[in-house]
Length: 570
Image (tube, rainbow, N blue to C red):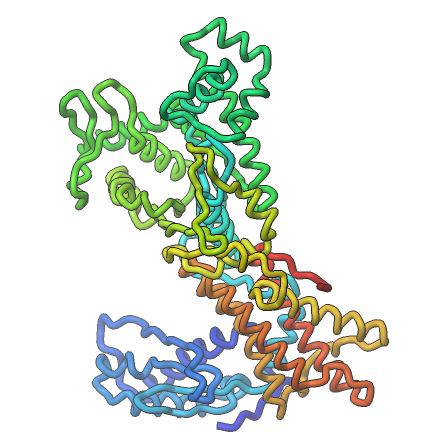
């Protein structure tokens, strides 16, 4: 197929080549069936999945589809024959000729496609029109999402053991928002348990010069809290000695909470809601959950305790909600929290928990189902452990023993940008070794700085060109034909919406950092092989300035998605 590629009569191309080609393939498949070139799909098959992806490099194509392989069984035809029929339908489509320059049917039934230079040019013009909005997409799924993350107990500063939850949670929220979701970031403080009492007892012991309790907290921060105890609080503990640890614990936890908020703000992580466990008790949310479970016949009493019949939903044992002494379990608070969130109007609840919470996932989803909610709307993402290493040695992270590196210490040493990159580049479920010394590397050998340098270089090119009175062309129309190097950069730029959509659906960010690295690499190669500003070829220079400006926008959008700065100079 050879494109006529009449840009003047073709509407502005979408900024995602994959989305455009997927739609054209659907139309071609439907036309092939309508014409009788392919048999009708059997009843009950539904609309076929028309997949489009980047093929292996040896395929020498921009995009490829395996739809023919998927249809071979239901249509009872050879994949190559199906692929040939779809390809012929594409060949006959006037609309496809403005997007697809050539089609190849490859064994055992792939459809390999090359995009027209004109489509790439129009899409890049659309990128520059979109500006900072480039890369934002709408992916299918539930819309109103509550993401609860970090949620470290307010018994000490955030240490690097909590760091991954903070980074992963913020990155996930950014990706979901870029995918069209309405996201609420939430931090859950456990201010109701024995740990807050232990903190109060630890502060009191240091203030009074007595021995720390066996399960007390140690470390410089506890001594600082003891030194800052207000006189009026000391007087209150003297007046109510039986409430002393509770009074001091609440005060100390609020001080710690303020420090946690400050640390997260420095990281660039903000929360829309700061929720406390005491709210669940005070406002009766646990009791509401119990009443709903009772109404469904899902509770029973045994040995004076109240139990949820979790085994009816596939759990290995039933779960206690209220102990025989009348105290609610953590599970009781969890189910109160579930009903509270749904009552606030969310249709998708995401919890980011440590890998050690694996055993609590099923019981919470079971309870949600028993209360009448869709269990798939309650999702727990378990974050794998991080092993922090310095010079080949493990870094200690024991808050109770007072031996840990705080999140502030980590950010002071390696910087926010490097920290964000290293956490974004790994799958949430994959354990990682975080080499602090490697993350500190300020050179382009460090991938985050390699990508940031690409943005800085483009900014410098544009700035120097402007100083010489030369600006980017208003449109790239007719400038990419015959230049494979420029077309390669164009294709890489235009992948961003697909990368964002894939990340939002997968709820992972490592694909975003991989894309950023690939785009930076392709740009650096383009800069090496093509002179961007050539005083003897002004129109070519203006076209190349427009192309690298689109690359700058893509890099800035990608780094912004990761919460990483995009410098104009380095």
